[in-house]
Length: 141
Length: 141
Length: 141
Length: 141
Image (cartoon, rainbow over all chains, first blue to last red; front, side, top):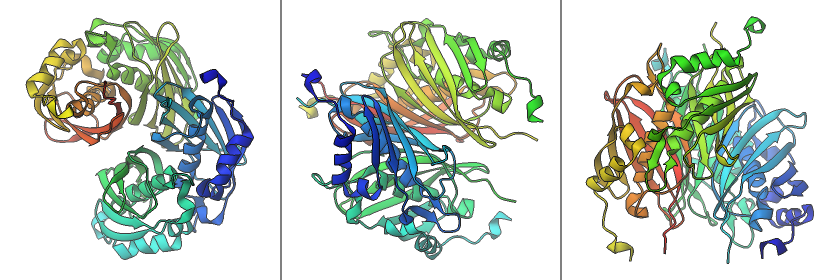
């Protein structure tokens, strides 16, 4: 029964991060996990720099953290990480050197398909990027 | 005059890659550059793995190479790398361990805004992901 | 000077609707206009039905009202309707016969490009569709 | 068995159009239907005009025909029209008064989810809009 699935905690999601080479490389630190909600930080590293002249973080890093946050905003509904079907990312502002503050929120959950959105800020609270995606949340029998 | 801008070559784009920490980390090897066209490969590395149980490459890596390829399909039109305004990525198939084969193609070029699409295959020619984006190609005076 | 531009009112936006054949056909009734915010309704008509067996409103109608609401959430910033650069729409639930309740909200305004999102509900408050778009908000000299 | 499903013809798809109030209102004339491919025209009508000063066709009309063409490029795979999960539309050029020439093409078909793209031209062959979407092509038992 769906209502016997334990609610996921910050420690549960951090454990998934810590087993993943890529998520560890992104330096993800999970701060809040509630149904439909996840807040986290990503830790800057020199390999993120796209262009040495302006020092900005490459858009693919922002895409990675947006994808993760939207996906894991659905973890209570889906029971675990799920396949991303598609993702849209809007790049609002050049991301300079520094850690990223990331929020994921469910938009609509369904039995086969669910949608979630995410937002990335810098440490000063400037909006860097936002986006939304479609996720395959088929309930396995 | 626009027609005096030298056409960009494989060596020109590879030089941009080689100066960039992130693009070097992605192991990008440029293979073909023509107006509106770029073909390249990305070299697998262990840090790309999202989930150790299934060994798949995280979607953000695919987003990174799609963003690069779409952006650089516009390099002759734009004269250099340009800001990505937004990006849509469709994830068609789980990306297993291995290098990526990437193609970028211009859709429509304009004076302020241009659009391009890109496709990612594995080394066996399976379609892994595709997408399209909007780019700010304002011609600087 | 930007701060001398009069703030747009419900009557201003309704007047734009009333001059437009298509917006009139959509039966748009503007209910609230504030900087970065618009609320409106669209009036169902028999021509909206896509499939007579299930009576649902075609997705293009939802796309039309989402595009309008996102665009006009930017009207105070832009000074008037602006070109839509691109739009993403998520279809959450089959839209049955009935009027539509639509909300548009600015995400981020810029001098050349701005982003806004919009949401469509049925009259019972069910979420039918949501989306976001990129708009060309170049300030004319 | 999947290979006993009859291939859909131009007449099959035109019959679906002719039963639909909205598709009839769009004046859709189907010209070519092959697996993964559809070509059609949409017939201009005065209600399409968004702004009487510039006479352009509203973006929602372009969204409607793009959605239809992408969806029906999958009709042989899916066996019939399917729910659109999400759609991205890029608006490349102002659409003036006139009929629309529309092409839909499958990108990738799957058992649960498929993707297709579509393109809209004016009668002079100018690219007006293009886009891609995700469709729910679950095979019913």
